[in-house]
Each structure stands twice: as structure tokens, then as C-alpha cells.
Image (cartoon, rainbow, N blue to C red):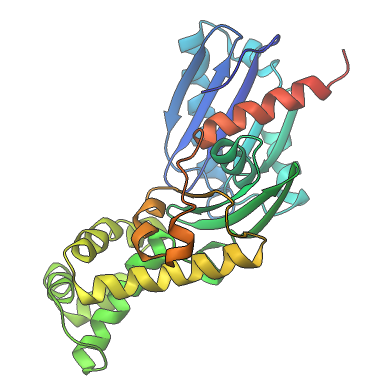
Length: 292
């Protein structure tokens, strides 16, 4: 992860599940990890996680927090929806020189490097992105209420919804539906859980869905096909064409591979690097742009 650099840089990649922080001092990369850091859903909580991560990173690097904060930094966080929240973060964070964006640019740069192509990043939330001739284009990332197609949150919620439909007889019952009903102690338990669950709690159901889908469960397969249909449509809309690399990233993203249209499956490509590696690359670009 990362490449040789003349000056040290700090990178932060924060999402709905975890926040990863790294220092590249030109010789090695030191990494620390903390919990969820979505600044739209919980600004103060995200800031607490970032602060704890910076303390941990400084300690591992043998630096004071002041010394670490003087290093140019790129911060990519879920929930950065505009300049207002960026400025709020810039004031709250200790960095002297910092570029703040949402988490999509780091994931795109990490997955593709500088190559043209597209990604579908499906973790707790989701977004879609294309890179062409160095220009980035994004779609989605609008959160669990208005977006997050094909995300783990989407998968968990869709599976519960289809389980309730199976009770009505609108879809066929399946082993997955029976398992969810048992785990939630019936339909009333599903409704009660759904009324209180956070996106990450919905997303925690996704591994169960993907596992049952692999075994041929019709409800699980239908949920995964629905998510794959969203992925295929959005990637085509933002510029994907046959022959361009497609990266499926995030915790659930790769599970969609067998459900995509056949003409897309041939272009599936492993990501070049992790989002944190992309954040480090963007941090290096930011550092090079700074006045000497």
C-alpha cells in the first residue's frame, strides 16, 4: 500500500463500520484503526473515533499529537455532504494543513489507481464511481434513508421485507425466511427490530443472506439479484462500457459478482489497493500542491 514519498503524509479513511488512519513517513506506513466515523449520522461520535485514532497513530509512530497534526493530511469520511460540514470538521480536527472530502474519492483511487474504470463500493452504505482520464464521477452515497442501493443495509432490510411478504403469500417461503423469523421471534419481532435498527444493525444481517443465497435459497438469491440490477444500471449510467475494469469493493460488494449480467462479469477486476491506500495517494497529491 502506498508508494515512496519525499515528505510524510497522514491519511484517514472513515466509514460506517470503521475508521482507519495511516502515517506514511517515506520509509514505512503506520496504521491505526477505530470504530464507525460517519459525520452525518453522528458527528461527535465520529470525531471521538478520529481523535482516539490520531492518539493511537501518534503513539505508534513515536510522535506527539502536535507533531502528527503538522503533517499534511487527507481526510475522507462518510457523511461529508458539502462545505458546511467540511468547515465544521476543519475547525474540529487538529491538522494545520488538511484536505477534507467524503470517502468516495479514496475508495475510487485505491481500487483503480490512475486507471480508467468503475467501482461499486458496497459496505454498510454504498456508492458508485467512475474514473476517466483522471476525472472522477460519483453517484449514490446518499445514506440509508434515500439511497445506499446494494449496500449491506439494503440487503438486510430487503431480506426482512421479503420475509414478511412470504407470510402474506406474496413470495414463496424459504429457509432464509424461516431463519429470520426464528431469529427475530416472529413477524412482530421483525417489525420491532426494523423500527429501531441502525444501518449497521441491518447490515449485520447481510452475511446470513449471502450465505443462504450461495446455497440456492430463492429469497436470498432474489435479494442479491435486485442489488446486482441496481449496480449494473448505475455503473452503465455513469459511463462504464465493455472492456473497462469493474471493481466490486466493500464488505458485500464482491458477493454480487455471480449475479451481475454476463457481459459485466468478464470485466470484473480485483482492486489495486484499499481505500486507505487511495487516501494516502490523495494525501501525497495534496502535499505536492502545497507551497514549498
